Length: 429
Image (cartoon, one colour):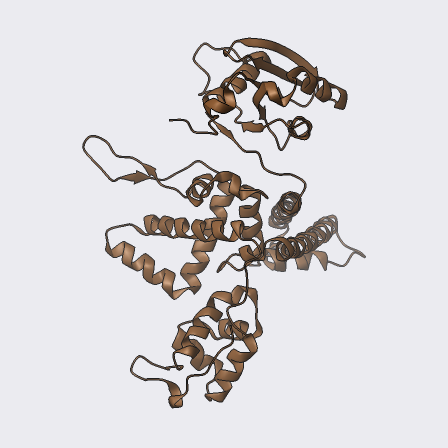
């Protein structure tokens, strides 16, 4: 069974296919004729002129059904853009690792280009490439910069901790038990005048940490702004913060429908279980260790947050554990459901309407004479979540939905009490 984009007989009738092995300095092109024979195998420089010559060598789109390009978001980006502009159908081809190559088969650019072309012909390991140059590409750049800033903070803290541990006994005790932020703030506050070499080094590390931390925080705010303007539905997913949303958006790309279904998106994120049945067992699955690991980490982060703050998620995990699943297996089920929610948000990026008027929730509560703590106890959430729902905070959208339903049910304060004061307030949606 093919595991990629399969070309139909009508698309292949009388046409050949091509494959391109891309690198930083050169690209190798292999063209197969309509019978699958190598018609051209040639190297081109990775320059604007070389890419145009490569496209000329392929010919018109009428004679080539599709072109498989490796690394359409890296070394092959220029090739993919040029071919797409000329009307060619471009497919992304996976770069082969050592296991996919046959034992004894060599590694050279000509063979890799031919393999890319034959993968297109067979529909193996090919996919529709991501669109570039839009908001998803902007998130990718911002997320990369944020990772480097956070990594710099970790390394600076490790260096400061190493130096502090070499200080004399009296000075070393000062830094014990401090969090990263507190320690680096104390380092940045070391008086420069008359400081010892150790103090001067800690001061420099503290200043550098503060600068990197400030840049990381600014990048998180900018990531949130991009998502608010381009995909607010992703931020509306319960317990999905800007960094998790950005990781999932980058994994799917600006054209998530290229994946075909939410099951394919779950597989891309490594959240789809893999069948592991044999002749003696059936219905068994194992953990999927493939896919985009950063997207998988984002789904795991959302699941952990829901376990802490969402009673429905805790009830679901408890029910699955009562059925014989371990907690890890139950959390994997939660991640699969979250992947489905994320897919809906990605395919309907602007569908993030607030479930009700936040001000109407506040007025209904005050009219009933209830405090936020009483509402929180009735809903099984924290008082801060109720306050966020009444103020329209996006991270409290899930609570606002439950809050709205509770108000429409008459605001019962316990299981045995009916509608409060006989009222049934109407919340505008």
